[in-house]
Image 1 (cartoon, rainbow, N blue to C red):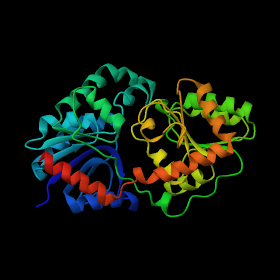
Image 2 (image 1 turned 90 degrees about the vertical axis):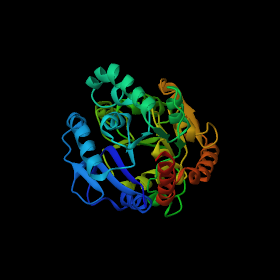
Image 3 (image 1 turned 30 degrees about the vertical axis):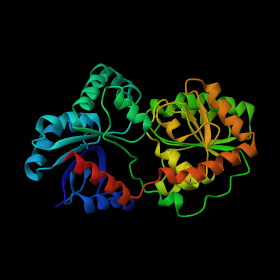
Image 4 (image 1 turned 180 degrees about the horizontal axis):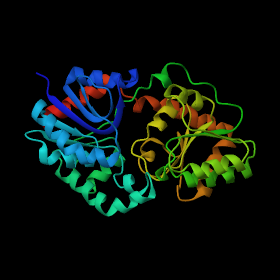
Length: 357
């Protein structure tokens, strides 16, 4: 008999699911009896979705929603996809064990994401997150960095493995040749943890030193003002708020490198996608980026606090074609290490659930 598992997620889903995301849940459904508690539109057997009324309403209703699913579904394990879901689940879990997933630095949610008013939550959110880690029945991490966060509060992860994401758009065809003109790409939400201010300041330096260099920024968020000013002030900078996931591969093919100067990352998916397209990364020596980017081998690591360090890394690669080609080849060779099939991910989750239940 399949183990019953309730996934509690802060994500928002739209049904029917995108085929790429559906493959993940279909594979999990083959290994486990799955229910998903989240926000979104639509409904079907696996998903229990509430309309998205904002974060405050979501967390206010969450304990009641979990209790209702525990009574109806009687799960063996509740998978909490952030510390705050684990806190909501613990008092109402019944006989279920709580498996907490750590995808990144829990301090980032209040300190470097969303409006600056969220920083007022940090004195409460930090101890709550640590308490959730300590009191979960098991913790799964994604990378050496996230495992280090968990060990720092005295807990040994039960397992460490990456989440599945659909890589077909990045692996279905060979990467395009590196472009002849020097260019960089940034893809991500425009929030403080992505170091948008550092990105903008660094590119102004790059533009002065290498006027022919081009930058494309893809993303939107709370930090759009400095990006708009950069586009207005510096020739060769393009900004697109959103592109379909299928077009990110094309954007990478058009670039010489990916630029990721973030202050914090868990295990950055965009780096895996960049490697799959044979593009090296100039990334921050922060968070989980050094877990993937090896300085001088498949990319360059820089100090996210120093725009001159970020700009220096970009200029070093864009000015040296031989270095760019060597880094690009190594990045492409490393890509398979980080790509996971939905079936492989589901099998690892089933094993972890079995051990816990």
